[in-house]
Amino acid sequence: MENIIFKNINKEYCNTDAINNVISYIYRTNNKSPLPIYCYGSIEWPPTYDTLIKEYHLIREISQAELSDQQIIHFIISFDIPVQNVTIKHFYFADDIAKLFRNKYQICYSCHTDNGHPHFHYAVSTNSYIDGNPFLNNEQMSCYESQICSLASTYGFEFYSEGVVENV
Image (cartoon, rainbow, N blue to C red; front, side, top):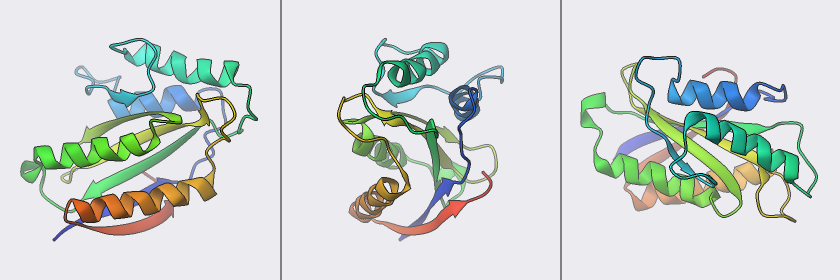
């Protein structure tokens, strides 16, 4: 059975550049060839890196619900396999994780393979684009983590959580 590791990045992401920094990081927008955009909750289709960032900010601006100081939640799903062993199954799994959030929160993600093991970075808006829904907090995130664990078993993956970690 293949192992996957869940990591919730412990940063406050409260500053005005938080959304831009995380989305730019996960898509490597400073590189010559940025990574493709995978997302749910985008208004403009197909999204660009800039419109994705603007739309995360827009939802915060127009929200009628209480806003969280933390603008974004960043988490990683890491696979314990060599990069060359990545298959379409890993991308389907990654997309199914994003689908868990899509009915309430904007989410975008990308696959990184540059450090020897494949892993997906996710950026989830803490504010729902559905009015009346509470902002995403750590307690709710632990419920999503449980759902990700269940989803992993349906794919035949063994789920391990490192919980909240300090560094990417």
